[in-house]
Image 1 (cartoon, rainbow, N blue to C red):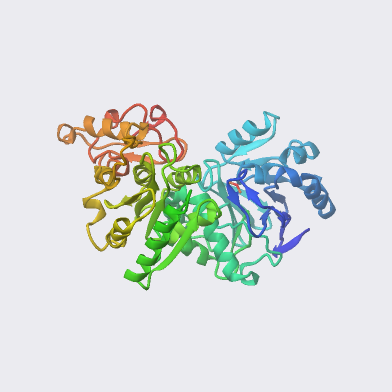
Image 2 (cartoon, rainbow, N blue to C red; image 1 turned 135 degrees about the vertical axis):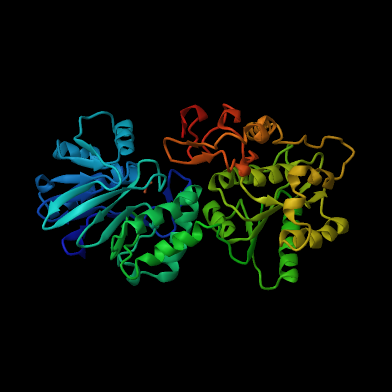
Amino acid sequence: MRKHVKSNVSWVGYLDWDLKKFHGDEFSVDHGSSQNAYLIEEEKTVLVDTVWLPHTEDWLNSLKAEIDLKRIDCIVMNHGEQDHSGALPVLMKEIPGTPIYCTANAVKSLEGQYGKQGWNFHPVKTGDTLDIGNGKKLIFIEMRMLHWPDSMATYLTGDNILFSMDAFGQHYACAEFFNDKADQELLYREAMKYFVNILHPFARFVRPKIDEILAMNLPIDMIAPSHGVIWRDDPLQIVTKYAEWADNYQENQVTVVYDTMWKGTEKLAYAIADEVHAQSPDTRVKVMNLSHEDKNDVMTEVFRSKAIAVGSPTCVNDVLTSVAGWLSMLRTLQFRGKRGGAFGCYGWGGGAVKIIQEDLKKAGFTVIGQSVASLWNPDEEDFAKIPSFVQELLGENSPAGEKSAADGADAKTEKTNGAGVAKPETGAGSADSASRTAAAEKAQPAETAASAPRKAVCPVCGWTYDEAVGYPEAGIPAGTRWEDIPDSFRCPVCKVPKAKFELK
Ligand code: FEO
């Protein structure tokens, strides 16, 4: 079980070859994964993290074969999530009283999940150190929201290893352990999929955290994450990639995402894809049916795209459930700098196009004004709309920002069918819309211009509302005072209510 990493550092984790799902069923795993725990054996013996609960018995038996557990002087828990802490309760029964170094938030997480068991916690903050002998020490670095509020990284001096926790990881079982030995195509595919689906909601924290770590001037010979391979060959290559991915990343790609009932919406999807290629032959086009494709893989393709077209037929005044669930997930990922357009068929009543447009807007997309809504089956008139729709999607006419779907232009694109049951403007009455409207109405920048702008900071994740900047993504203009924001406002990252924010 033990694999040599460097000097007196060993990998003592669990290679999970058969893992197929992660976070319940939210994340698909195609090539296994690993829960990486590490053993540092200097004058003090340090265990960094454990493994997921189902592997506890195998893991503990393997660890006991390597080391007398009583030799472990302390445990570093970089993160409380169960894939890393699941085996901790059983381990602590074997070595009660062993000091556990983790963040204050991790104490909350561990006690919340496993109860108050009187464990010997030592909460640490960024910059705190622990001498482990032989001239080496551990330096702790809080990594809030990478992945959750309790996350931290641990740096080992002398060997210059950054145990980075979830950041820079991949769900990828690789017996060769190191990035230079891994299948490079697979490694980067899995690293991107992991970043997109797990870390992208918190992408705004990536660049400041990278800058903070680089400013510490710590030489980095290896980055040892908690999943997947250890980066030892040019370890900063993955840091560079993260900086790139966190900065409104896009390639020259358009992805058409849809589901269909009787193939009408599918015909539109295929025609849109053909038209993208016809208008822009260098643009890569992907077409993905949400009922057949893995949703995480679809998200990765959306992440790579500069624009997407989303289609659904209208069914009982709504989009299909496959599309609804996917749009809900899309909203959490917080992509920025991408265009989006909507299309779909309807019969007795429309509405799907409007719903998609509203949801795309909530997800941070710039929604184009044109859409294609087809009564019954697409006919010549509908197909004739596609060139102009694609042109706008590609950003080559009618700048989306000048004529967005939120202005209501899209509603005119659905023909009436005689039944008179077109969907009302779904989403217009949502809490988000109400909050934005209320905020916009209450905002009186002119009256407050004389006051120095303040900042309100989320106490959990550190997301900051700056009065000087406002929160344009939610329709809150620059200059809006904190007290003028509705009480229903919540941190857009971790959902902490407004009342808990700290005003500075
Ligand atoms: Fe790998 Fe956030 O747990």
